[in-house]
Length: 225
Image (cartoon, rainbow, N blue to C red):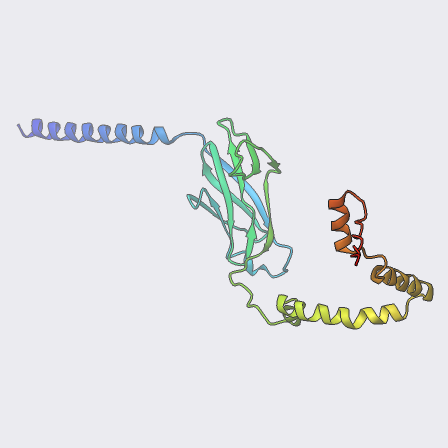
């Protein structure tokens, strides 16, 4: 009786172990899908100091995958499935342009620019990826300072200064002009101001209503005594 219970207990333990192994294999097998690696390099030419390396992160799809840089600026992202990923470089001091990487199920990798407005427009980039800084990150706006040009180009100042300059400069220009030019200008002014060249308004109105005929003055009538 004791032997039978012992054999039964051992058989139950064996069956339990086999069941656990089978279930574990069932859980592990679906994860055996194709995984790929993504490689690239980040370069900063505006500074020779390498302190930016430890503060730089490579973010895949907003941080779903994160990669750190090596001492030479290169990086590798492991365990990526096939699909399309947006690769961004995060650094507090420099700005980098993002890239989109497409990985096919056969492992072919293509890099292109990120275009949110026109996703169908494809502008390819070299692979392995190469990121270069586009400029330094600016977190503050420069404070405005007073300049003399702000005063000179003020509309109220211009309306006062320009007429004054014209009054002061034009007479000097006329005095230094050619004498013949001065005579010509003087003759033109005299012709405009001459009274004989200015028509009489009353005469023009009279001619208009009389058909161009000059009105005749009535003769004086003399009374006979």
